[in-house]
Length: 509
Image (cartoon, rainbow, N blue to C red):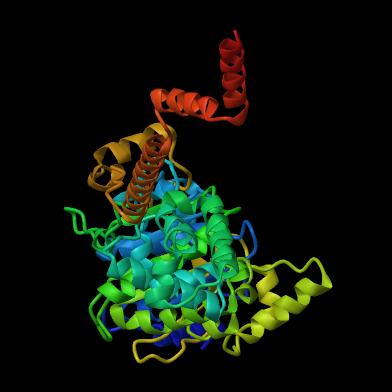
């Protein structure tokens, strides 16, 4: 038995599945792809999460596209965070080219072109399905963690939420909670102190500044109504294909806080609303988070702990989460340990630091008798990757260099006309296009303050009128003034002496 034959049998046995699976591609040995040696991933293990890593230009996006196509074909919806904006071509049928057919012929895997049902979504004002959430839906704990508040500040946020609940004032957007903060430090200070205790103005000032920071990163657009409903991510089209939901995040690079806010809220919402599935035959939804380092680099320790907790728990809901990044070291070790499937594209060794990173990366993968992992990592071609997964029994599969199959859809972005056409046909765009600004904390408190100001103004006016009237009542009339003046003159000593003088002269005559 040749080495190639032995290896082929080894891989086919290790990656054999009894239930439904997807084929990522064909195995490579000594730089050559082998026919009929397929790398199969069981659908039932995809809720154990995964990692897709590799240097720029090594084929990560095409791997995600292939993965998403295979999932959609099996009736599994996909949520894709498209930060670079080069994933949207999955909505259009691809073009069969000679290099693609040759690639598939080498591994003996049939190729055909297809398109897939797509929804284009946005966190900003870009065209597509608007994604929003209310402040109330976050709750005080999650909202505090997003703002990276300490225990004292988080306690004040809890008081704010409790106050609004007691007063039946919905917290929908950021202007609501900003208004409440201003109210409890000024007009409503005594009311808060009486029922909830004293709140330091310095603490509320810090919270307010944190909210403004979030607002400047696009939080004012994200927070509000109509809230996005998780069920709309789980749609299947009339042909039985799962919808590929693409969130266009091309403007998110300079807004890491908004990105991590959205991701955490989405995962938390999915976890809260989805029923327990246990070990189902296939996942309910698979989420791909591109440029995952944007979450982890900007996240506080508290936020990282929250993400880690949700990643651990969400698999029981039938949700798979896949992180896409350039280097596996971008993902915290605590999260990396939770990932069952790893797809590692080539890494580049330009510096001593790069070589060290490659060595560390190689140590994260199973030891192989067929590959020197650290050497092969730098020599993998475009569209080739190391793969290790979980078998149906939950055990790690052997590390295998894989020639990834080519996408069936277009390997390029949609033009503006195609984007407009997708949005025009979308039911969700119509559903979430309306911006609702119903009466909430901002309007209620503004009305309350205005009414209080009006009452104060009216009371002041009444008091002023009373003062004027009283003053007028106490002042003598003109007749009284003249009369008093005459009496004063008549009764004065000078006047009397003058009168007596005149009379004396008259009598002497």
